[in-house]
Image 1 (cartoon, helix red, strand yellow):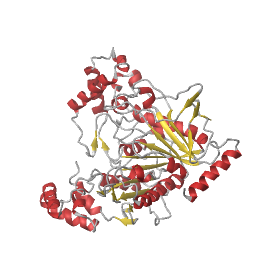
Image 2 (cartoon, rainbow, N blue to C red):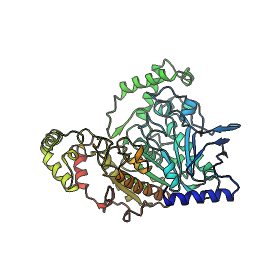
Image 3 (cartoon, rainbow, N blue to C red):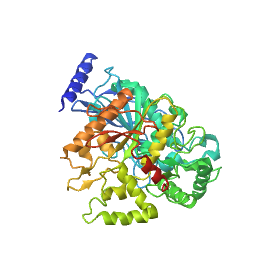
Image 4 (cartoon, rainbow, N blue to C red):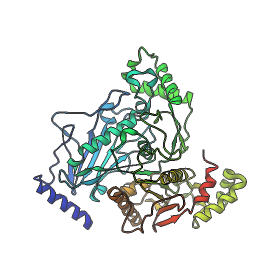
Length: 511
């Protein structure tokens, strides 16, 4: 056990005894009722806490219960296509908590993890997101489920009445979870006035969406967007006809629409898929644009879509960290091929960029002098530049600082194959759980080092609003003029507008 972990655990123990609580006693009273959890290695954990309840397509509301609920296991994933077995009530409104102390007045910063999977799949328990290691570094870690896909974003507002607020209930669930976190933070030794939201991919998209929602005002103080800069193109002109077509496909009318609340999920989901395909087509994985059952800019619950290129000025005082990974959607296709070489890479570039292939090659070598042929064909071509666009707009608006990062770290898996800096690699590293990622060799000490640095940065940003680690130089705020980005790698450091010309080139091929 690391020395600082021992110190944190000892402090938690002494504070707990000082307030009359026996170390390891997990029984607590929250706003919903009483819960018990687990205690191991100085960390209390509670899994599957129900934070709200709701009728289908209606905004969530707080939940209450009598007696003690045992919270030892993750709840099922929220109801979603491809994972239809979970119960709507328990899976849709569950969260998990890790902390080093209970009711001890320690005012630890609270970090709420919002999972990825676009707006249609995923769960707060998906991936290497156990919060134990971050809790050891001094935060209260919360991860959440919320309504997804057709259950979270079916627009029935044109039917009026109680359906007017149906379109963004999936995001309003997250708002309800934030209200729960603020109301119960002290119970878990946290500071209700210092909550940081963070997420990767679709989770980063949700963080950006919350920055455009009036109802989230006052519920969080900082935001971290990891590979989440995607553009939702949905507005009421798209979402309302889609909602109406789903209702018609189910054989319902304005007079019988209440029946939609009891139709089995498989039938509902099938109708939603059919209508989305008919009206919008299928979204290509990796596309910068998202549509279908996702947040709608209705001018009320969501004022505008994020990353277009920036955000509303609802929350100018919220510091933002935003960044991405070097390779994003690439895993090992080219890196694990022993026959891949420069000639094959140049063939791919010729097909991709035509007569401008040579220009691209010059720009990527200028930005990344050590790049390899595998890098030339796998470098991220949209999330980095959309992140920079958002950072440009956010920093130009003034207010709280913006911090940019790029993860370029390469690992090796258990078979010794090179593992590029793919989409999602930042998750196990930020959670300080590199050994839980299958693409990382659990014996790779380099992975332990970068994970310790990144988790330090994420935690210290939650604590102070400035990302930092003893192993890093000062992390300077981003501006369009400086283009200051922290490069996270075996050797970390600041770089300044180093890839601006490359990203400008790639913008011409953005799709």
